[in-house]
Length: 301
Image: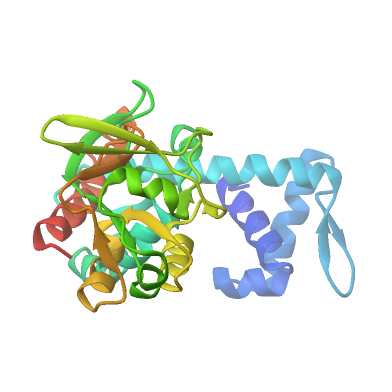
């Protein structure tokens, strides 16, 4: 028995929820898929699938085997890609994790051009702010804003910088007035990003002097675009990345405030970093994606 082929047939059958659908995807006869899985079950001495005329489902043993088999196939694919990727052209699957709004607004418009340039590359891109899966090996490279690598297990490459702007809508300013100094924010409704720390401090820097302001407000969110939309609707004042609100400021939908200051939440940084594990050092796939981000930033888009 070709064990890897049997595992692939088993996985495809479960994912497709039937022998016929799996056979179509594998371009095989349904009888071939059925016979292979029957042989697999015989070899293991356990039923992996519950069969009925309407559907197939996993048995208890099948559930355990499914997850293990999928990991085996992923490891084999990673091993193949690791060797193939050392050639002249990026080859194989690249699994990328990028921050939600940064990926949706800045990276997504460039993906078509990126894939056209590298025809042997497959891109699996996830929008997330979580680094846990990078350590677990689910992603090959992650783009992160502000913070450097959380520990020494990552290689961290700085690709660029961004700035944060204090912004509000003209309607909000017409009703509540414009803050002229950082202290004035204490009398305003500030929209807060849901950072891990409980305190909400915006640190204003000017002429080497840092002025922390503990802002208050009734709305906070872990999604920057939620805060942007609330700011556009006149809900309050927000501290948001320039790449997120520059177009809104340019068209007059938002007004930039206190522009003489550099402003960051607490001591957060403004770097755009690429993070990856040491086993990805020298990867043509990773270098190609980092090149995409570097070119994008240099073009100012």
